[in-house]
Image (cartoon, rainbow, N blue to C red; front, side):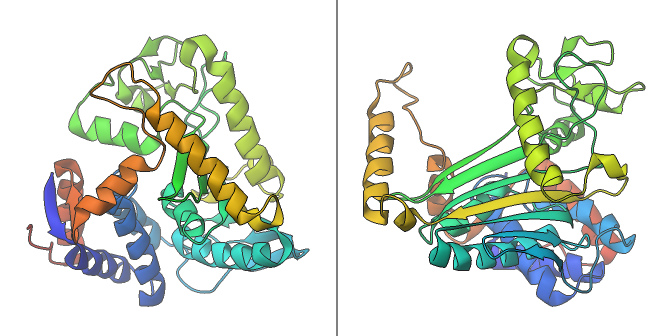
Length: 348
């Protein structure tokens, strides 16, 4: 891992995105959320995504100008068309609208079609949780085919991540998971470093569990396995169906349209605890539950029980204005820097 000054890395990220054609206002929002993700320790979804975004910008498959279209607005429920604009930028606006309306009506939900990739979900749910809201986000890519339905062998679904963030009397709880055992970003990281998974998280084209991430590049292609693997994969398959229903079914745009363009469909729900049992009671209950979990006798005394979000909070506390990146990420960023004539920041 190599450390960089946060401000230097942010400036570098903005420079790459603007050189590729993204207006500075949008680039600043995208870069800020990517750097925040790295600060939380989720380096697969931070600035490491920029080398994947750059050809989308230069090729015109990530839209740079304009804004979203409101397809339907019933105040508490909404549908937006994101026009393949940067997902981080769209989600910043979607969160603000939903938080404002949830504060007035108790909750608000938005289904968005045709956004571009929205990045790390817990970075987004944390925004709402730190302002006192419960936030659920799910996303899928109607063009993506990485995960076979349970019992099948052909890639059909995306990993279909979903996340929940909620406030406590301390830092927010950040649940961030997906319907597949691992993510596409993690598969790419293992392929780039030549590593094998420690467990059989992949499925070869003939249906055999394997630790080899390169099966996704084989012909015919292998797949990522759903949560539960060969034994209980029906559970991950069920989660995947739920996410695609919320993100594609409710937005009215998905696999039925035979989509070929990389993008992100989104379902966002924001809830104000004050509209239910009250904010004070909510914080008391969820904080007490967290305390009980952390106090539970650990199987390994060296590894006590953690709540989702504890590790991110620890990483944020240890950042001290610096961001640490794996060598694999730096190698790809250096190549992008050379291509777009942007100077890579000096390591700390």
